[in-house]
Amino acid sequence: MKIIHATPGMGAPMDEQELRNFLSTSKQNCRLGTVDELGDPNVHPVWFIYEPRSEKIYINTNVDSRKIANVRKRDTVYFCIDDEAMPVKGVKGKGKTKISENPKDNLPIVEKIMIKYLGSVDHPTARSILETVKSGKSILLEISPSYFSTWDFGKY
Image (tube, rainbow, N blue to C red; front, side, top):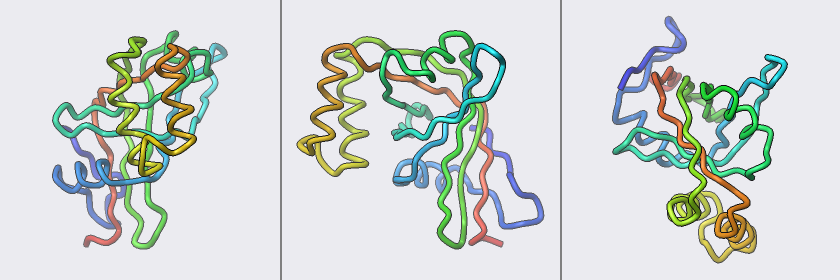
């Protein structure tokens, strides 16, 4: 795991365990950066789940979304997850993506995302999203980060 200090001279970087804890427990949106067909950046706020064992980030989205169209053309993405509450801290990075279109493989991961953000798979929004997964109308992005750039202004 490659960790870079995002703000030298201010705060301190997270160590591996702090990074894993932050990504595993944060309910902040991930801002996913992709590049469109014109070469312009697109930023997409998304829910995510981080799997510490594999060090991968997973994002569920509609099969016909702009982010999927962009990733199909260029599989490199940027991401940022940060907590604006003082003292601020966060993680950003760059990674390669794979698209998973198999509903049976995607469903358990998307269920984890629904529990993280909504507290239950029985929430009406969760049920609706899970139906899109089962029907193949939504798919999963798997991001393999090449590095994490971190900051924690609560550490000096």
